[in-house]
Each structure stands twice: as C-alpha cells, then as structure tokens.
Image 1: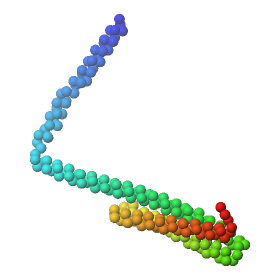
Image 2 (image 1 turned 90 degrees about the horizontal axis):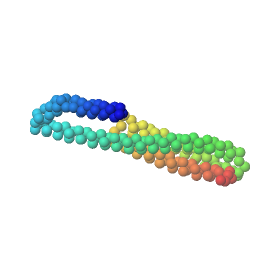
Image 3 (image 1 turned 180 degrees about the vertical axis):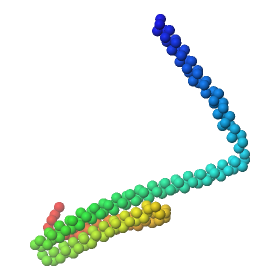
Image 4 (image 1 turned 90 degrees about the vertical axis):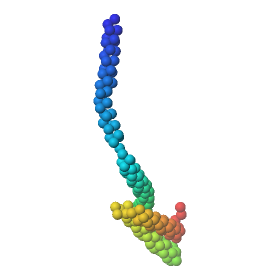
Length: 194
C-alpha cells in the first residue's frame, strides 16, 4: 500500500512541476511577442526597396565568393598536383644523375671497342643534359606555382602561371623519356641486359 501512496505523490509532483514549467514562460512570451511585432508593423515601402537592394548586393557578393572559392580550389588542386610532379621530377633527376655517374665509371673501365665507348660517352652526355634540363624544368614549374598561388596573384595570372608550370612538367617528362633511351644505349654498349 505504501508503494501506491509514494507512486501517487511522485505522479502529482511531476504533474505539478510540468504545469509550472510550461506556464512559467507564458507571460514572458507575450512580452517578447510585442517586442517582435512592433518593428514589423513600422516597415515602409521604401524600406522594402532598401532591403531588396541589400539582398541583391549580398547575392552578388555570395556569387563572387563562390567563384573565388571554386577558382582557388581548382588553382590549389592544380598547384598541388604540379608541385608533387616537380618534386618527383627532382627526386628522379637526382637518382638518374647518380646512375649516370655509376655508368660513367663502368664505361671508363669497359673493354668495349672505341666506337662503342664513343657512343656510350655521347649517350652519357645526352643523359646528363636531359637530367639537368628536367631538374631545371621542375624548378621553373615550382616558381610558376609560387607565382600562381602568391598573394598578389589574379585569376588570369594564376591560370597563365599554372599553364606554364604544366608545360614545364611536360618538357621534364620528355627529358626523362630521352634520358631513359640514353640509359638503354649505355647499357647496350656495356652488355647489361635486364
């Protein structure tokens, strides 16, 4: 029996608390409603025009912001891609230059005919030139990226600089293709097969 009495007291207390909670803000809500409706009733036709003009200006600003974000995102992606390519080109250039030095030692100690040695030395000179040019192109691409993403860069300037950076990387790629052919020529003279 005492359980039922305790349960009834708890239910009454909860109901009373809920009633108080929901009714305590009724008078404050009425005051807030008066504050909210007062400025709305004083709006004039001129104010509507001003609001619409401000809205149009805000829309134009938002569109400009969205264009800048889209452009800067594209510029950032392209710049990051080209920067990654340039870093890889510089790293590959360092490895190929080290390989060229080892090949030079092998050619110098080779017992091949003099015409083959001359051909190998010519290929090594071409290899060194192509690797050096690829590294120069990679450095130039990084310079163009810095210009494209710098604080004084404009949309047109960024596009032109990124185009130059991509062109530099295309030349670097061609340099590595030629360097690889030169390596194959030297390996052929040395009699190294894969």
